[in-house]
Length: 444
Ligand SMILES: Cc1cc2nc3c(=O)[nH]c(=O)nc-3n(C[C@H](O)[C@H](O)[C@H](O)COP(=O)(O)OP(=O)(O)OC[C@H]3O[C@@H](n4cnc5c(N)ncnc54)[C@H](O)[C@@H]3O)c2cc1C
Image 1 (tube, rainbow, N blue to C red):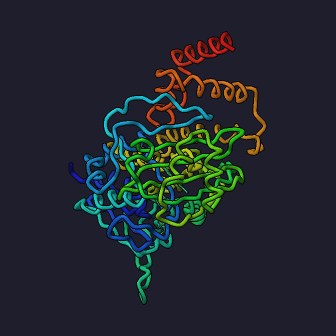
Image 2: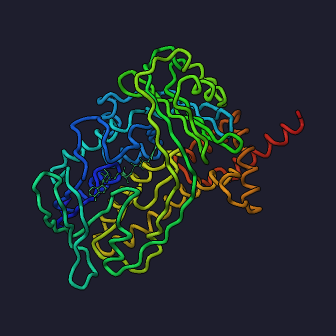
Image 3: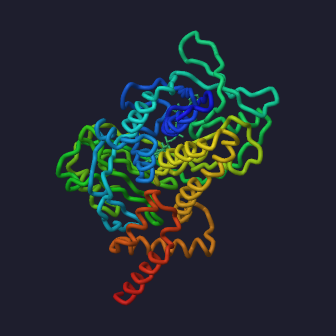
């Protein structure tokens, strides 16, 4: 493809930044990704992304999208050591194990550092993309009238380095949840986006174990979503190097234990026997690590009437989701794919077009996550009549999904972000849930 536009800069070389760089590489002659961390050569943890020590489950929606951005992504993951599987991961919703469905194609699971290193390698191999690490973006540069961003001021973290300027036709902020875009916009005389917050007070505790063939009867993993009455859940997923990662989580102040004895008691309180059975025989490799996630945050860039030309924001910098739903990386990938498609029509007004387009998938994931969080009394949200009815429906849906393949397929497609949330309200699904309810009432 002809590169129609000169240069772009991406702030941050994490999942959103790498995916955005790939999208931009099709339109921009030169793309520079600036990352403040020293980037490792392989699949190692990074200081600036402390969440990378915890489970990172890539949903099917993200996997499919990354494959379109990076053809052969799944093969690269397997070659790098990711665990490939044909039988699906068990998923518990509202305490019910969703009817296992035949896996469509191959699935892969890995640690977050492995996933990031595969993407980084693919991006670094693009001839028109350069990744500059150990370097801070200090602020955007603007035209004299401040209507257009013209590049960024950067400072290498190498000793003795002085700040320099990097010109760009487009600057993409992929600097994560702590993004300074709102402040930078205000400094340029633009309005900051409205922010919506959902306090969730989530705590994760994570350890790695040696994987043995008998664990989980050879299955790749089990996910337990927290639900009202049980604000605790967990992920037990196969990883590279014959390991399992176990992340247990608590919502609304529920604290997962750090010591092994209490962990077993905690695991025994979960709806699946997989966790305690696994813990009774598994050999621990790493010490537990803990991370707190106070609140989901959404910044409504799509509402702004005015925005500087040559600038946009992606990934967690736009929306950071409660991690128990595993939405972040998928939305980062979906956003990059949208950006790539929008740029085909040229770079004019790309920010406005992008924020409008990305608001759809962000809204769907945000609604799914926050609606689930609001079901907990501890959320402090007073339920409306509509949400009370929906909650009741979700309880029955989860029960029906335990035995009904059609309902299970709909639920899984929504949880995996391959379909929109209204899929669970489709007449075919609704009808089956109602039938299950009346059958259960007759038996009861
Ligand atoms: C505990 C936890 C568990 C999670 N689990 C999952 C999961 O299971 N599945 C899932 O899909 N998502 C999960 N997520 C979300 C996921 O981590 C993020 O959505 C994903 O990393 C994409 O974020 P990002 O690239 O926008 O930002 P980040 O990953 O936060 O990266 C931002 C990058 O920008 C760099 N940076 C910041 N400021 C500057 C600057 N001024 N100059 C240069 N560089 C800068 C940082 O060093 C960093 O590399 C989880 C999150 C948490 C907290």
